[in-house]
Length: 138
Image (tube, rainbow, N blue to C red; front, side):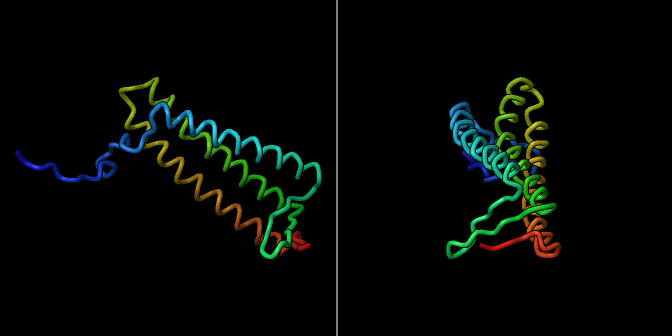
């Protein structure tokens, strides 16, 4: 009996190896659902306040306002969307069983690009805050 090789399945287009099961989706929905609610409440509070607070080292707080605040706002909205992607992928794969590898591959790219965009907008908001003098430290 030959021993099977350890093959990287994603290299050959099978993205179902890292897909979540039903219990994983329930836990993911509960944890990231609560985190999303906290982020939404934080965004509503920051919008009403007119500036967004970012904790920094030694107990200081950085405040972003103006255009820098809205770019960071967009970054947090993309984070909420990123939290929802695995759950959407699970139900999409469940409803279309024969195209599950194509769906998983598509969602793999969505996850990758949303992560890149989240960090890009986050860093860009800090740079905009420094350049446009939209950042205060208290």
